[in-house]
View 1 (cartoon, protein in one colour):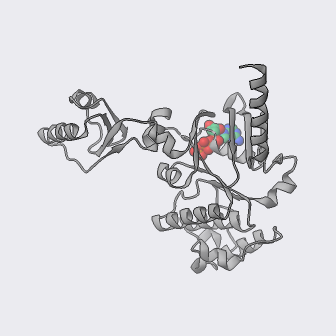
View 2: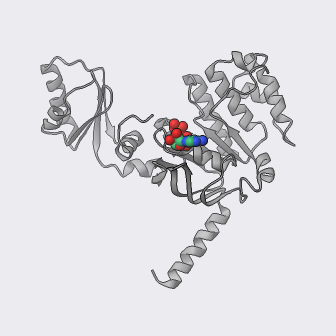
View 3: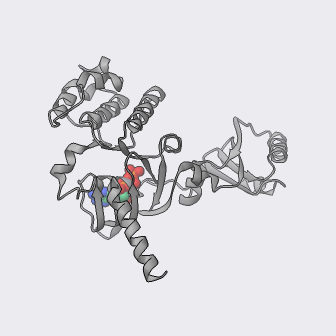
Length: 322
Ligand SMILES: Nc1ncnc2c1ncn2[C@@H]1O[C@H](COP(=O)(O)OP(=O)(O)OP(=O)(O)O)[C@@H](O)[C@H]1O
């Protein structure tokens, strides 16, 4: 690269960083000798829904908590709304909303009291009862937090994140433990926030959540960025046609790979199999014949392109992490 091209790139990068809502540059963090975030670099643009995906222990929460100002980076630059999250915390806190993973705060207060308490920290908070209704907690408004169900606690945590009308919201596994209705409501709230120009950074283990909500997805593993793009670009990079099926766990993947039309066979989770092929009709005949001949029951069968989940498992491996 010529000196001039390098200067132009640096100038363009600087301009982009100045506009960005979140700038993470070369960020590293260790606990003792364990490096949990390793030279991470990404930006989140204004109004974007940005998802951080990664297996357990990949460094997502450490990254998010550093952006929120709860942890200090060892090295690297972190800017949130143009501010240093620790040195300029006072200016930053009123402009961001944080949905925490742990919901054990204030067990003796009712849901409404918790929201009133948080509303008091902001100059222009949302209406407490309207927000309780939005997150589906009107009937639980007078219930003490310790009596709320897991899903209700998550909804209260979401309301706490939104009470101050933030410009930027951090959602750490927002729908974990929610039933399908509450999950739908939460997704709808996220879309509504986006329509209102709010920037959202979310972490999730749910691939469909990332695919439905995120403009861009960053996959991190062992503290390093291993993929960053729109969900459509990430999945279209996978040319293979896949057949997914559910059957008893522990089928012999070598036998499946030996079927003439199978290019690759993998048990991605117990009893959940993914086959890659370039001839789906032929593969379906071979697979169903193979299953019938061995009297193996088949409980689900789907065909399609590689999903974000397939890409994620390919990039991060399919072994379970603690
Ligand atoms: N305060 C701490 N002291 C020591 N180690 C920590 C601390 N916080 C996190 N870790 C370790 O750092 C690693 C990354 O943790 P982190 O919570 O950032 O991962 P994560 O991607 O959010 O995982 P999960 O999906 O399980 O929430 C893990 O191995 C974790 O045990």
